[in-house]
Image (cartoon, rainbow, N blue to C red):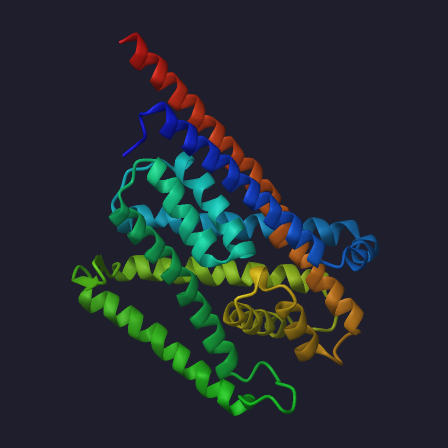
Length: 320
């Protein structure tokens, strides 16, 4: 229900401005935690075509991720147009990468989709579909790479190469079980904590895997472009996948420091540490901070458009 009382409308606008200000503070905080001296040095040393390629891969990854919610139209069965979906999911993804999946990915989807007229049930299905899409692709890629012993872990790591291989096989088993369930139980309604959902069709599940694996591979491609030569792409992809889970496990905003530590630890000896760190910091600038800055502008535009539309509706109501 939308607030009609002038005081409630004013409170809603103030809350929106404070929310936007909070996001701006988070952006400044994230920027301060990055060693910009090393970032500037890395950028100065990169050939322009490498930076351009990193930018293209970043844009392609975000575009592919936005496709998650476009594909979710068929799953959730809503009729919201693409021009409304794309800015919502872009803002949500950029904030999810920087401030966490709960507040960014889910929180902003809930906030912005609600304003677009979708019910809580539909929004829940969209979030479920996007989350499953992201992690099924992760499990497939990580499962293949870990099962094949693509990555050599440093001595002293508790898991070890054998343990990582077993984990990889288990991950592939989860993906296989998901596909079988989608084939056999598509259409069955499941109830969890007051919410109901169903598995997608096998065709849609395969589309989920294709989109998600493509997205993770594009992300690793950015780091690979920025790293010095001699490090194979599958290794970079495996390290990125491990780093993503490590960052999620420690609940650090944007995984600051965690991703850098994982890359330095796992690629130490393959390239100078300073160059590895510089590549990851530059990747962070491309994939985290730059999209976050753009997302703030997009979000501000969405807020302004909403207020203008609200003002027009109020004027029309007064005239009536």
